[in-house]
Picture 1: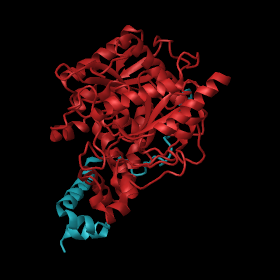
Picture 2: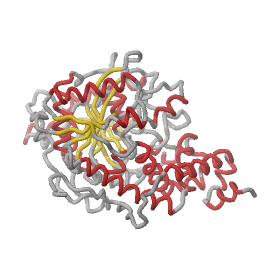
Picture 3: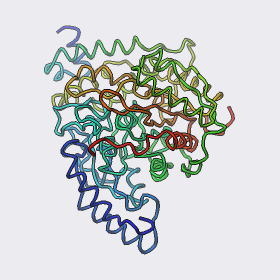
Picture 4: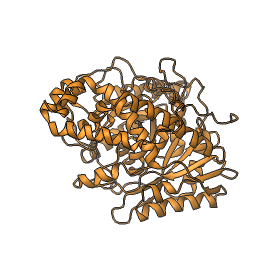
Length: 63
Length: 450
């Protein structure tokens, strides 16, 4: 089993790999590009945004 | 209708006639609901005659993107994976439309699960652009955009996770509003990515947009993303003009980050100049680059959509359109740390946009950077689909509206720009949008032949 097939199996995508190994290889490469294109904040303690709330001030609120 | 000059039944029948005549060219409708709609229109006529209209939408036929639940009908998500699904209840936004007296007349085409592109390997054909049916109408709320632009329906609801209301609105020459994150409940709307999903409106003009938003906005304790703030009269400042408002023109989005076509760029410049003529203070402002926002959106959307679709991708991958599968699969190869890094970056981007709103009341940006592509040029469509400036405001949650600002010379396709406001400042957003619409000469622009 090669690396891509192992990754597909670990992701629960054995059937998709059998359908098209090329699609899985492209997906793995795409995920790596997505990771590389993100520049995370430099400050090690910078907090993530809360998931279900856009944490901006409302119109009219003071900063 | 309120004055009794037009019956809801007559209005519905006129739109059903138009759907029968024109939708074979457009494929905007997945499921027409004539019997149920006639019943609702008849009841509306009776009620309006007896006690007056409940709202400006009373008796008005509307369409729903087929990700939105309508009790007793399938919510197919334009997918063969959902052909047998039947919604048990109305989505919260549909329940509110019905409470306002609107008539739900049709379920409308989308890209599969709101993420694929225009595809021909699905149970329903892709919607086409009424301005030129050789071209796509944008997406993923593609049927909503095409149907409203072609006057098959007065207005429709769509969903917007990376620009999917504003994209078809831009390419179809109508008004597309993505409200503030949390202002409109997502309950009963099939998710693409929970933390980025918004229910939005597609309408012929800004006043209709305000009426629709008033009907569907408001808190929902059963939506974990719902903002607990009451709805407002979003039309109350329409007509006040833009004198006294300051607008930050984010020119680098379409001149440096991604370069728009010459005519798109010229149309956006003309829109900015129009706001200056109307009395707004327009000045250039900088935000983080488009690529920064897009990188965050891709990872969060990929991971969340991967979670939604994991079981189907594992067990029935062949049942997706090829383009949908290709867009969904990378999300299953992201790592937990990628998602947290994206969420940390998201906080920084929200702060940057908030800082801009310390200086100005509104932002003016590009929407699409190209006119709509042709169906027979799939590679060009794939290339241009992601050339847009809408995604930043899914990442930040700020309200954004797209407005028509021109027609392309060669193909006669609509061009558009985008206005963005502070969180929950839809009233100001629609005030400025209406001032532009009232003065720029594009309201009522109609696709030739429709």
